[in-house]
Length: 257
Image (cartoon, rainbow, N blue to C red; front, side, top):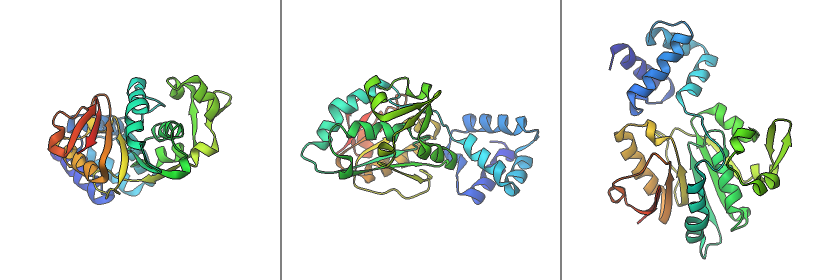
């Protein structure tokens, strides 16, 4: 690790509490180098001097640091497994539920969970919490307005029932928006709540180091009820789930033992 980048990481951690050393270095360094070069800076040191005094630049930096790529029912086949196999088992005999969408980006994932859960149980009987480190992404999530490409995998009937079209955009109905509580959270440093039936954390763990993943898998396990499930992304298979107190229930679904 270059001295310039190493000092930048330390300065960012002091300023924001975000530890960039827990992200894969090559990917993060490449993304941030492209950002500062685009703005005309010649070093991480020079870039940080601006971030330290300019709130707007800092917001843009935090936005670029995170990965905001999301859509409803992303990787549809996996959501189908959740709907037809995992949720019926989790909800069997239950009168309530507690679900967490971690690193929720712009909200497509928790809203998908809301629409899916509503088929099984009244949404007033439980809670769906959605968290992300990026305030801008959370604001867009709370607005609940999406381009058509975000809805490409959503079933047509569900689209008609839960959205109203306004020109090229689709607006989520208020009764769906009300079911999700959004909060800002740094997965790597903030405490987790507990007693979840289901935690969904997809397409973010691939950006973390093995050390960070080990910590997160254990924290996720601690936050689940016995029999609760962690649902990860399609490039994030856990090859040694027993090490973290899980067993594989289906591909990319891990049940707390």
